[in-house]
Length: 619
Image 1: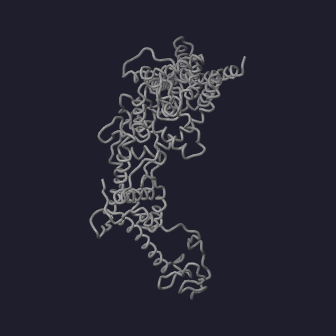
Image 2: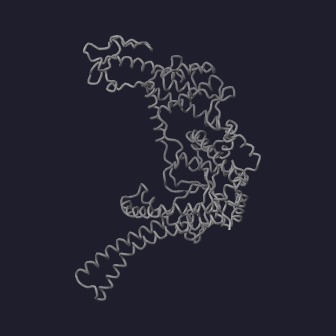
Image 3: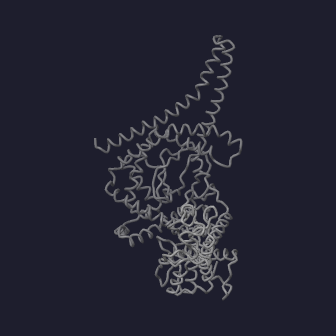
């Protein structure tokens, strides 16, 4: 007997023993539920036969009977909730055998070589992972068949494949990656393991039902004991369930060692690379489009472009593009474009919370249209928002004309720095120590500070002031920071706060998308609020201000210097000048936003040929 067979047998036995432990928890819970009823039956039978008579026995009989009724009602309620609660279902796009006969043939060949059952179906998800998902619950069966009742449901789990794998991996690589996943259908078919999984998933669904918000007061109170019991049982069998799944994974991995094992090691490198490219594509490229009400309809194809660009820039990724001459796994689909569009829409829904179907305010965009339809509109929308906030703050318009200009923004932020510096000098002239004492470190009456590097004290100060308190200066009491951060202007903070408030109002005005409203190609997965997986935390006011100033600079460059919006596969929206991507704009913008220093940005604008005093076109 080979080592892999021995390892597989050990894994299966371990998983089965843990499954039996989970089922024993279920059996003990059932025993606890029927124990009061059994005692009540004994007491009632003893009273009826004349053996257990007397006042004490009558009291015990009625008390135990009442407890038994309460426990049975609670047990029935928990059982009904577990039986009818719909377990969590992964958001996927179903792929029928007619839509991907070659893909089904590949998976069926894998199952035959591994001597395991064929998965009941194949589905794609916008994620860089693959797994088996049990959808044998009756609620899932009714859901997947449009509400029709089915007496029989598929016994084998569904194979869920990450859609980026199909576009970036080659056919041989995909087969090697899927081998250990498909091998998991063997242990999954074991009755004890399947029963334990159903019990754990039912408990998890019951806990979710009890904790779901928006329920009526009566239903919420009634579900409190159900949730407590479900959590108690889930805690009791949680460790056994985790070890059971670990045993199943170990057995599947051992079984798959005989299928493309060497190639699988190389394919795992492509898994990590695909994950990096997918994450960069979503956060840098797709997210700006989603915020504009557009969703890229070829995200999976964009992964190939992003990773090709990465291999061109990064020496560590050299050699990966040589694989592109082989047959891609997306050729296993009959219509890869339609599948890509469906998974792209699902990705927008999961990671951003967009509607389930395209509409006037939620339309697809091709990569060729992305610079004009997304990048240019994004810049001009943010520039318009920036000037709306400036108008609300009462900032004066430029003297040369009524149009919005970049000069107005730079003047406001640079004046804010000057006012902040002046205010800092003025406050220093009247600085008070702790308890109202004047310190010996304050500037003189004129409010001037000593020149940098001066060894003398400020005018009007001495080593010991007239009150004799100058030598007792306590830097901790004064709250002085010997290494202070650069002073931020009050106007810059106010402008950042205004932009944050404007963005928050626009987001609040957007109606929430219900999770149950899905299209024909989407599988509903519950009532959790969307997005299920937000890509980025909320941006700070300073980050929003930097983005809006950058957008204003780009609009001025496009309108006055012949620049053009562009798409970088790794960094998202970018500015093209003479066909070349400019990556040196962030520093000057941050100097203006953070320090109120407009000189670096003015130097950059002069070098590029941008005229900041000219009005720009806004949305």
